[in-house]
Every structure is written in structure tokens, then in C-alpha cells.
Length: 141
Image 1 (cartoon, rainbow, N blue to C red):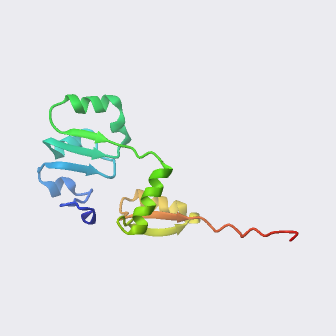
Image 2: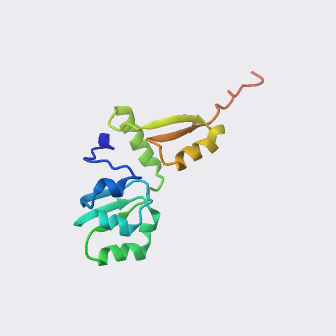
Image 3: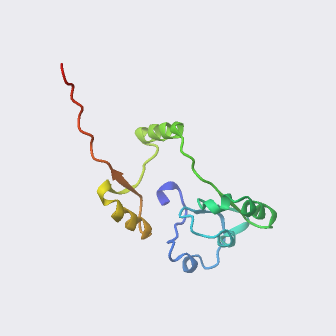
């Protein structure tokens, strides 16, 4: 996270102890596991908490965040887009975006990849590879 510009990175398992009641201008919950009330408690009154928790897209939660005094909680979901993938590929190729890959596994190890992911200790992405398709041959040439 520091490589992405974060001033301070907090272990998700020790955040209560690490923060000691401090509040921040911006909190980004990359795991999407913190409830909106907890996120609001971590942000200064004029601050914003951003999460990937799909529950914050709920209109009732969004309205409540706007109506209650204090910090705003904003959620977002990424929707697949071919154009976005082309843009990301360009950034990767030019070196301005550096994906962090923890491990590359064959698809046959999907179950292990799932266990690793759910264990909460992933520091990057897990990539699953598919077996190469056999080369097509031309008949009758």
C-alpha cells in the first residue's frame, strides 16, 4: 500500500490497537469487511471512507450516510468493461501500473487458491492459469 502512496498502512487484524482512537481524512477499506458504522468512526467529521463492500451501494445505507452528520461512507463496485481492460493493459505495458502478484497457480489448484485467499494473508493477486489449448492442425492440405 505504501507503494500506492499510503502514508500509513494498518494491519487489518490489529487496526483497533494500532490506531489508538485516531481519526483520518480518508480511509480505504480494500477488504470490504468493515461495517459502515466502523468506517465512520475512523474518519474525521469532514472525511470520507471508501469501501468495496457492496452493501454500501444499498440506497438506504447511502442515504443514511448523506443525512447523518459526520463522515461520509462511499461504496463502489467495479463493473467489467473491455475498454477499461485495454486502458489498464496500456498502463501496465508502459510501466505506470505495476500489478502485485503473490502467486501463479494452475487452475487445478483452485481449491488451494481459495483457501489462501480466504485466509486473509494475501499480499497481491493470486493468478490462475488455464492449460494451453492444443494447436489446431490443418487436414487435407
